[in-house]
Length: 218
Picture 1 (cartoon, rainbow, N blue to C red):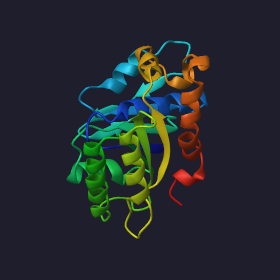
Picture 2 (picture 1 turned 135 degrees about the horizontal axis):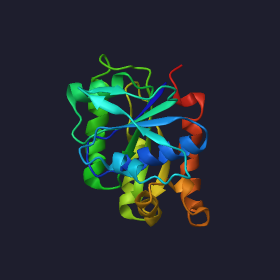
Picture 3 (picture 1 turned 90 degrees about the horizontal axis):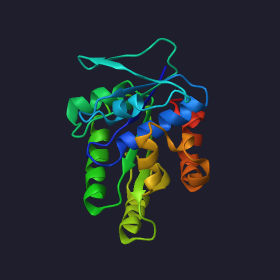
């Protein structure tokens, strides 16, 4: 079973939106998907409870004592993490996962918080699976704004240990489609195709990466 972690210790960056849309895409492409919702707000569990019967079922993982139990034959587990995940809590989330998606918001505060988070993440490299594959996505971006330009600058200058650039793959616009789809328990891949064409195009780079060997440890 593969584990995909959606992680950023700062709240309000759209982790649940990213997690549920990944889940929706994988489920309509034939995978048995389960989700572990560690966020106290339980937005992911609420989303699953609203899913209509005509779309593929997505299971809710049972969380007890920090351990996750999923239904048999689960292909992919998507973990929606809480805000303020640091230290050992952060390491515990990361160390058993193969793939990590980090959503970032285009604001000065969020960019600086993301920089500190990446520094902390790699300070824990002895505690985590150093072969984990990670990628960042810019979320809720209002295109052609100063904030978007600042985020672009950050993403092009932030370096990982060893001098590699922070992997950045795509931008998601600030769209009401995500809200409307979520209200119905759907991903944008299951919602009004004529209205979500542009959003689906923005998701192609991330989903192509997640569906490829490039997103898995070698």
